[in-house]
Image (cartoon, rainbow, N blue to C red; front, top):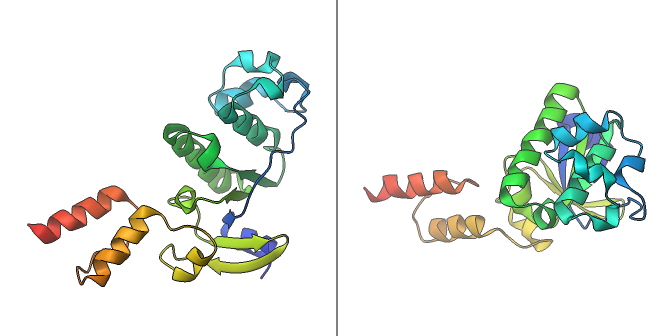
Length: 187
């Protein structure tokens, strides 16, 4: 199966790989071809003063958001490095925005990152690619074969360890659900 087929099936696909921004850093934000730039900046929680800055002078989170709004008019949006560019609050906000773009505006989105935690509560399928070739595809964050290509998140390791010890903890990616499950089993 190709990545386009997965996009058509799911709308939002997580890709384990590296991502590099393609914007020309020697130009100003206002010089980018962004429709309704004021609304777009507001949508990603950026102030209007950002328009006067050069891309090379932006922080990583600002650059990520500018990269995203630069692609909003496209049918397929490719973004990446959420784990390296955004803090937890911004990451959560951008996840909600991406889900809204897929569900309400029927955009197809590819999220590229090396950290599997970024894909929790965001994508239904995770793909490992090398160039244009799909090496591996899974819908299960607890799939051991996925972690041959990337590191396993701590919550996955903990649940697997506890279940190996016979604790029978439910497979979850939400720390609060894990705490509730452990509390129920102890009391």
